[in-house]
Image (cartoon, rainbow, N blue to C red; front, side, top):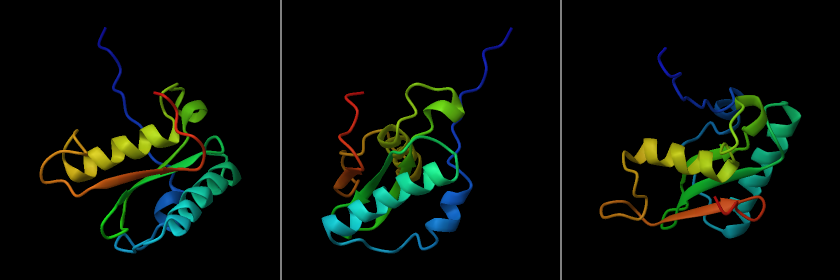
Length: 117
């Protein structure tokens, strides 16, 4: 028997909410507003728990990757909002090392204290 594939898909509503991938969020307040809105919409859509997170480019304020809690719908205990944002940012940037050479400085913003995971 082959092991199953592991795949997490962001909720469908995310593309409708975050339509401008080049939009900048220059202040901490604006970045926090984004992740709180992600958390709210995640609950409203029934696509996961009340947690949102995102990875931003610290220099430009551009949103690199959003994340929401998907623990229950994906049946995956590690699918926390900040973990999904990190995983998506790694896919988008093409590297597992978001602090490595050639990667702009990144910032994780979370609607609550990030999980120790």
